[in-house]
Length: 354
Ligand SMILES: NC(=O)c1ccc[n+]([C@@H]2O[C@H](COP(=O)([O-])OP(=O)(O)OC[C@H]3O[C@@H](n4cnc5c(N)ncnc54)[C@H](O)[C@@H]3O)[C@@H](O)[C@H]2O)c1
Image (cartoon, rainbow, N blue to C red):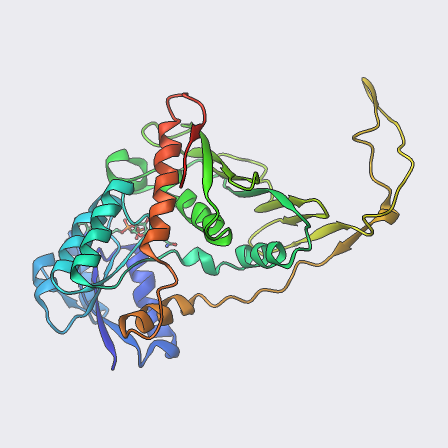
């Protein structure tokens, strides 16, 4: 059976979902987008031109009994109400990230998915990013030894946030936009391990109302820490990933996944510490480690297929598989984001149990 999907909010991202559904043959027998609703008549006209039924209201789209699943890709502040209305109308829901403005909204959405029995998932597509899968593979292989610090960054220098992302009321800002992906990746990688402390810093470099820079530092129950940093005015980008463990340090420099792992060759090796002179004084601790005690190894191969997200959603709708992106996982991410925003007034770090 080919599932019939509808779209609420036919903007840039929904257009991308729609185009991909047509481009990838592998979706052909699973689902197709058949209809759309958008508050903007021009977008609705475009949807019609692209072969979709253009509904004049969301209610009409939700009343179409041939549609079993709805993609919600509006501004973030409308996700909650549309997702609830769609599930109550008997539709499964794929919601764009961030699934809601905060954890309280998501709790209500989860309650409705339980009450209606409808499949409810979030488009956390960056779980299928190559850079993330390389890091996950390296971490899980143990090559880094006891990995104690993770740094995940995206740095741009355009100094700009566009459109609705500039406004608080619509769920704008970089923590909700990019941070949500990066936190989802980290929490997914660490499984059930609890977050016990959250600290955050925000800046408004070129945008007044919402964060165009954010840094969130998490402490996990094992003691390891993770930093998520999103910058829109960083002229010299730091690596996409930096992970240090007792036996090695991993760097993934960029989206192209250049980088390597520098490892200790033999942890038993003992060497005579040297003292080096810096301009204003000597140091032994920070002297370079002898080259012969280290080796550089390539990053592990990773070849994730983002199309698996959709295959899994369809399999979950048909009761064949569990969802990969579970709303309860998104809830943990939003609880971390709530805690991060609570630090914005300068109260310092917050102890949590997430
Ligand atoms: N997963 C990803 O990688 C990714 C990437 C980009 C955007 N997104 C998410 O997708 C969503 C949309 O972002 P976008 O970049 O496509 O923005 P966009 O501005 O291009 O599209 C949003 C669309 O929603 C419509 N809309 C707004 N309010 C509406 C309402 N009340 N009812 C119906 N339609 C309404 C707008 O007219 C617009 O066409 C956001 O939640 C965003 O965070 C996800």
